[in-house]
Image 1 (tube, rainbow, N blue to C red):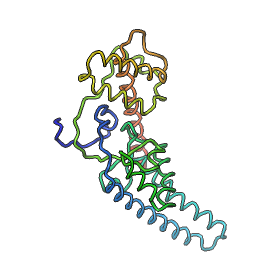
Image 2 (tube, rainbow, N blue to C red):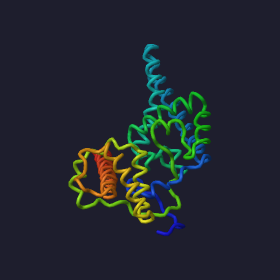
Image 3 (cartoon, rainbow, N blue to C red):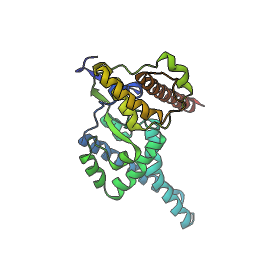
Image 4 (cartoon, rainbow, N blue to C red):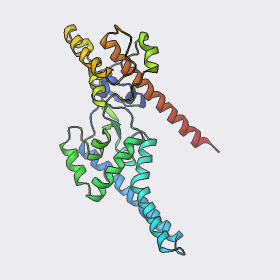
Length: 269
């Protein structure tokens, strides 16, 4: 696709767009504020509805039970609901849906429960306790428009419809496919994964000497987080491509399992 054509991000783009992921533009401050306001209204609407419902149900109960129920309503509204929604939609709240935004990991992969929970937990403080001022100034100063919850969770928010130059993701080298299936890659840091993706995406434009030097340094850094090591004599760029392709395949498989679980839960009678 040409550089000036529009492309709509899909789940596959977020998982497999190795070089593309590096160029995903963050959401503008205005759209973040707009989506955040919608989420705040939704949260308080849910809180009021729960409190009123619980108050009606607890008319003839003791005060201690009413206090526990009220606390539960607060926890559900401010923590459980936003965490569950962003986890199930892979990074979308109702406000983000309205503005065409999505929260993704720093390496542009789909977020998990852990990321959504940390974002919601920190959001209680920065958005509701301090009326959004820490989130506003953090997003204003951050190159990626990150609020404090994004820094804590290792995420940022992107627009779903952007101008992209779609570059094919790194393919799994056939000679390392068997090794990659059993290798432990879970501990690879996000920043290092980004550096590897940048390197692989720009291989055709790098001269051989620089390719060997940069690839060697990256391979040494990645090898510290991968076990077992690749077969002896494996070129650095082949090793790096195998690691990134394996991570992508595992993300894709995880998303497929989650989608299948949601499908079975929602279709069960």
